[in-house]
Image (cartoon, rainbow, N blue to C red; front, side, top):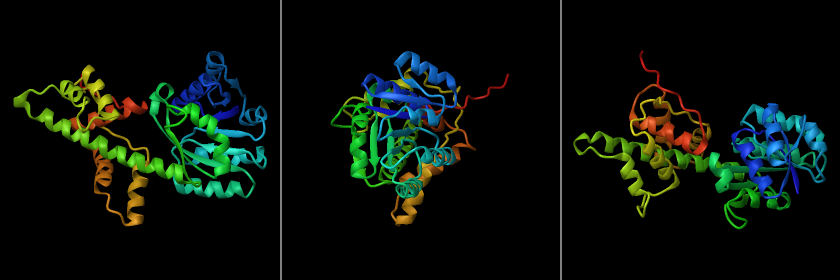
Length: 306
C-alpha cells in the first residue's frame, strides 16, 4: 500500500518512520526540504518535490494524509489539493482541526466525489515507538481503505484505533480527549504543588510520583512522564510558568456551553492555563513540563537576572 504524507514535522515525520517500518510505502512532502531528504535516505520514503508531485506518484484510489497545523494551513492545503484529485480519492486530516471545519470540508469534498476522513491522533512524540491512538471519522467505505495504515500506526492491529463515527466524529472525539487531558494535568500539578508546599515534611516529589506509579488509583501515563521529569529536576527553576493551549481545550468548553452540559473541571483547567500567562507558580512549571514530555511542546525558559 502507498499513501502520501504532507507535513513532516514532529508528528508527521514520526508517523512516516512507523509506517515505513510496517511496510507501508510513503510519498512525502514538506516545505522544508531537509526532513524530506532525511526520511528518504534513512527510511526509504519516496521524496516529492511538491504536493502535485506526491499525488502523481500514488496509485488509484489515491490517499493523501495531511499532518499540518489546524486552521488556515490545513484549509488552504485542502483547497489546493482537491483539483489534483479525482472521484474516489481520499484526503485524511490527522491534525487537530476543529470538528466543525472537518464536517464542512467533508461536505465540500463529497460534492466533488472525493472522500474525507478526519483522524484524531494522540500519542505525541512517543507514538513512533509506542503506537498512536487513532479516532477516525468518515464513511465506512473510505475508512475501510485506510485500515491497513491505521493498523500499522496503532499499538497493535486490533487495538488503539477505531472508526468512531461519520465525518467530524474523529476530531470531535479527540477534542474531548484533550479537554479531559487538561483536567488530569491540572489535578496532578495542583496536588504536587500542595505536597511541595508542606515544607515541614521535606517531601521528595520524585519518590512520591514514582511510588504512585505502582498500583495507585491515580497511576497513568501522565504520571509516568511527570515522575521521569522530576527524577532529573524537582525545582524546575529553569522552566517558565507559562502554559500554552492548543485550542482543543477551548473548543471543548465551548461545546459544553452549546450542549448545556456542566463541565467545571475542564473549564477551570482551561482558565488556569490562561492564568499561567500572567502568574508565577510551581504548578504551572509542572504543567509546562508535562506538555513537553508527551508532545514535545516548546517550553519557555525562565530568564534569570545576571
